[in-house]
Length: 524
Image (tube, rainbow, N blue to C red; front, top):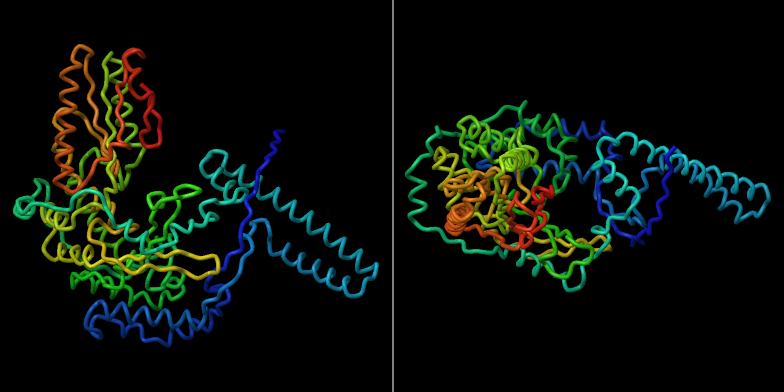
């Protein structure tokens, strides 16, 4: 038997006010009665003039139902709920507290003994549930250390990122919003660049057209969603699931109307941004990570469009062969396997390898929308599809929301997002890897591998060819840097890394001992 003792300093958690909707209290029979009374089929292509009116009418219907059956409540929580406090234990605690109240009033020995007995039973029950919970978490995740420690940390350790309030210097949502939108680098492209992509076609491209979908696909898409975050429109995934299957036809009508009209709804272009501290004691805006929350309904439409676009890109073999980010059957494992296998093979042949890991500064936020749209034409998207993406990318707004201890929120004024793909979106990653796909054309001497917005450039060579190898790597790096400048991206020199692998340790003393590649440490 293996025993372990943890001595953990628990954080004192301040009470918080939480606003929520009590979905568990909904009387489903009454909700179904009201759902069936709504003319959902009236929200179709013929009754309203445009997709924005369709979205507004649908949102009002659902919000009206939720306000009636699950009105918003605000409650004070002194501490996060403990997973070992079961319904049975809650009932035991209620009985214990009742005995205690009666004893304080009557002061009899019988009530005193009853209270003490119940108190012991509650303590023993909590101890048993704790033991069962932790034993289960450990035994069920022995083969998954990441999940094991994630569960243990969530139940044992306080989450400092949630506990730590922002200092007063960072309690200005307008300042934070302005800094989040301050993207490094230039946002200028030449007319010749745009003209080239608009009047040429990729060698593998055919023609891509967005097409309408049926209710079965929309239902599957809704069920595949995971996030229950509530966007600017006030709707959440829980709400949509409660309205199914009655609302399915209306949701399908919204999706198809957007595709047919090549218009992305204006109400879905507003993002709520909540800053998450990168450190336990953030002092600057740079130490905050923006978490963007988009409307739930928009993710249904995005996922459908993303699926159609991805199927086309893969079928036409448009994406770079060595791009492992945001692709089916690809990931960190494929990127690591390719690069590390080549490094080891070169080392076995007695060769050296120059490995350069390039990091881009806020790559997703730096994309130039006009250039992206021109590249979409270059890769075969028809005019209606490009028009839809133009509507999707433009006229977007975001505001920063800071939650306060008393349950209220501080909100910044909305500001226009002029660059980049929507943070937190489903389409954003695919659009980025398509936007950056032609960077590989600048690499003539080295091997390469892309993982999302990380670029690995490496060249293996015989020790006698060191001078020419360095020149070849520098040539490719210069070309890549020039491509970045013309495509509004910036290489981050502080996070980019360089190493020579192989050879004697004495040769590498002036270089980094280890570098981190996709969370894996590589030494020379």
